[in-house]
Amino acid sequence: MFKSVFAATAALSLSAGAAVAGPFINVEANASYPDGEYSSAVTDVHLGFEGTAGDVGYYIQGGPAFIHSEAADDTETELSGKVGVTYAATDSLGVYGELAAITNGEDEDGDEILDWGGKVGVKFDF
Image (cartoon, rainbow, N blue to C red; front, side, top):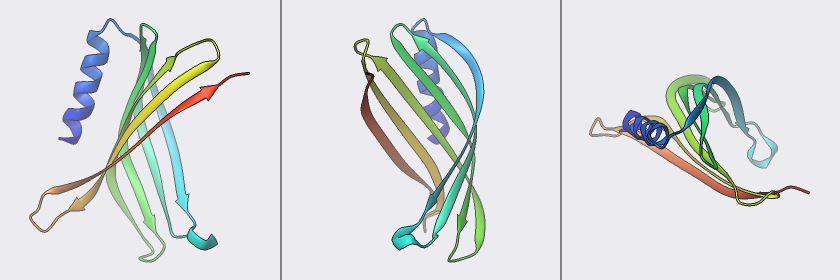
């Protein structure tokens, strides 16, 4: 399912007369410090593509995610990915959204667990 979501998004973007700007590599590390103490970190190493379809910009990216847990002092490898869109509503107002997913092992039935996250926002330029 994880792969099909990203493939479908890419196909829809490209079928809408999109212009693909090209591939990119995005390396991003996010660390967690609850109560000021290091707890964990996730480092994504993604290959992605970005482009435009009319007034809408988009990107799709995915690859391995290295998850380090301080409690276990261990690093595990999972798969992660993101799809996002941007839209310039006016010259000074932009709207954006992103959907992200990461695998998280298997449940007791042997089915792959997939954790989802998302964000939406607006950006005002002065």
